[in-house]
Image (cartoon, rainbow, N blue to C red; front, side, top):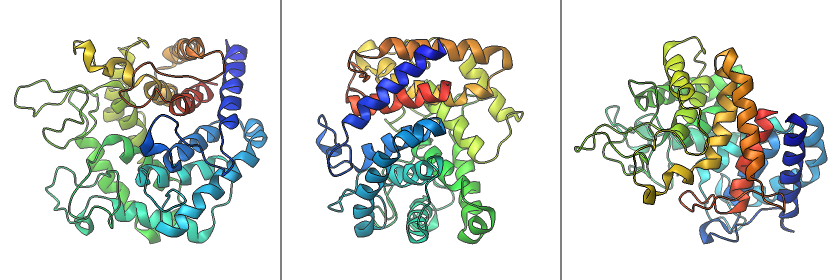
Length: 351
């Protein structure tokens, strides 16, 4: 299966590279909010970062063009933005810019690094953003930064918090200490732990009564959100970024939560929800990407068969032109740029 998966991954990456615009970015043809390109470009750069070094080298010219495309917006806004300066999921994009740069072995200019770290640290929902310690959002990250959403939150969640924590965790020790990263990560870890349920699974957000918890609630009062697969993968990866060891109870419980749900056709946690809600398949490729990254933490006997099954599942979903696309539009995976980037991340992680 590994050779078939390699061929499938190569076709998918070739398809993505062929979609790169002359300006160096990738632009959605499906969603107006994403047509300017900043968010999708960082997502695709992140996918390239998971490739083996020899394959990264093949696409280094395209990656450099993409970073140059992002740098024009960064110069205007102090964070990753579209070339005209419009923001496009800037906390996600800033975090992915930093992690992709490092995975691709590219040097981050000092001023750029300081700008992006400053934006991410300033975006954390703490006192500087106008939030008290007892706020359920405290310590997490949402979709915007301090200057864009002061004293209000656009919705802290386990997904963007995970990506920011992974970006911060890459910073060198001395530089990181001086910038306040250890404190930010400690508070972020506390937020992540509040998103974990007693059974080990994770919910999207610990903000009360939030409709962003896609698996709904187990009670009528909307105080007990149900965990689901993508949030649990993000929770595990966030804890790992914070230095939690795989032997520690909170990680063992979340891994066990995923182990007991081997199916790939539907994202676990949405069982019993009405099919018309669309979430069972709406997060399909995001789940594949997250699961592929946490599989190495599974019990040893589970890793190889689960990895084989996941790779086979992804290969079987590829279209004739080399892309992937989700029939559900619930999480915009019906945009092949998004689905293909996530599928490629999953396959590269499996390999």
